[in-house]
Length: 214
Image 1 (cartoon, rainbow, N blue to C red):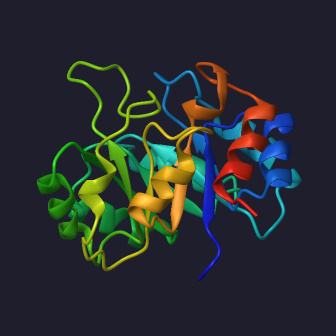
Image 2 (image 1 turned 180 degrees about the horizontal axis):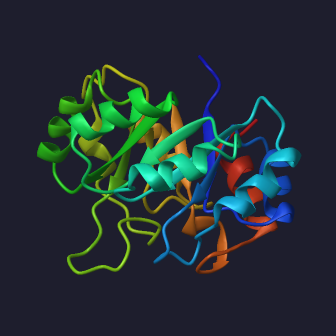
């Protein structure tokens, strides 16, 4: 069995980046979306990059970004992947991947099995799918709100490209989520915070430990 991949998302400080790395996170997520309490500017990303080892992936999380915005972030040379969290079409995903030369992930908002089935349209366009909970209508943010979906919806679904599980994961339920879904990657944000946008070093360490029991 291959090693579980763990992404700690919404990081913004050297202290919490260091904690995620020390705890065994394989991927670090940096949100570039002005409406989010986890938003980081390109210069913050550039400043954090030197403390991140080469073996740890660095993912920018964006919502329907313009090419100009993408170009600014990619120019930092701090990223190894781009994650799209809006309503980007398979065609847009493929175009971003081709233009900017980085792997592109697509977050899929899930409420029903039909949402999971519809994700098949991204095969060949996205490098990874991230199944996340569909946020309530009218919500200010497309993710990072601690909402989960029915994980049993993923049972027995053939997924042809790499994927991960997000939405409502925390210290108390991550082991159950992995058991139910068989997810090869898990992604957490609000589940390791003391307040919106404020990551907790202790919670990051506890989450990674809970996800990888001895």
